[in-house]
Image (cartoon, rainbow, N blue to C red; front, side):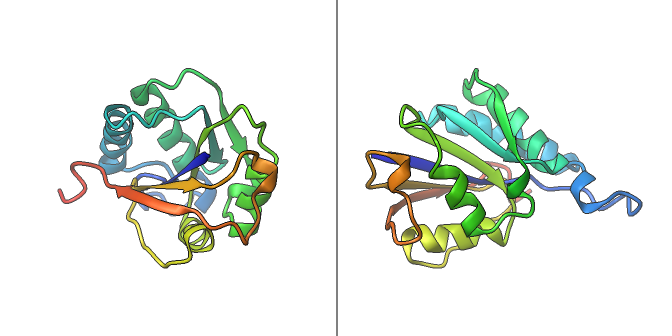
Length: 164
């Protein structure tokens, strides 16, 4: 069995209209959310074997803060095709992972992550900034992953202070 953790980037800032969408940073709330999610991921024993992130600044900063706080000690792979990222982009990259990776975290954007979740589990679910969906996939090898693969949505975790 393989597990994919779909993590939407933490809350981003719109305070600098001169910046491109790709270069938008995390806002104050996002800078709190990302480490909190890392701690929650660690507490839930969900530290990934590999983290893949969109190249957008807000996604990279989210991935870095989560990695630092969840016990992840590997490199974060930045994937061009994850910005903005659609289901086909995510599936292609995931299907090329080495089989030694049991649990992978994908840090990306909506609507692509929610669309990927729909493809993987066959239901529409939404999740807020810094929320993470845990999906178990009935695979022995990542190469088996296709749009027809049906996984199980185990849970969606939200940052503890999301309501503040």
